[in-house]
Length: 121
Image 1 (tube, rainbow, N blue to C red):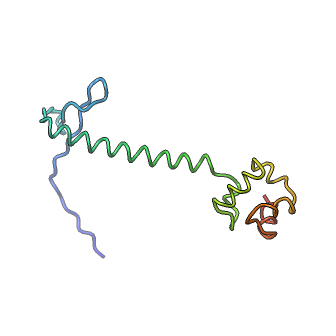
Image 2 (cartoon, one colour; image 1 turned 180 degrees about the horizontal axis):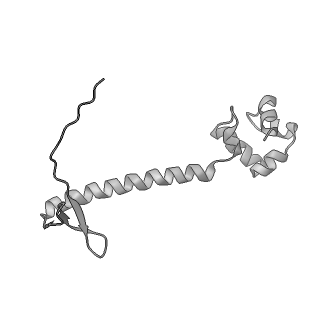
């Protein structure tokens, strides 16, 4: 499949912020500022707020995944539900590692096969 390249002449504008980090005007590539109407300002603000909210939500989700990641995530057959059951029962990954096969299989959903995989941690 061939990719066509187009030379588009689309003007690009940046947002000029005030001391409170609020958009007050637009600026072109030559750094010329343009005053904008209140209606356009409101629209730009809505776009900006939506983009910021999306970015913040995405980064919180990434951070939360990192915070809750553990050695249990690398064991095939252990998902979020079994991981939560194990952590609720033993309190920590360290305690899970130190548990016997019998103690591990006492947890809901943990078979002997899974318990052996956990002991390999």
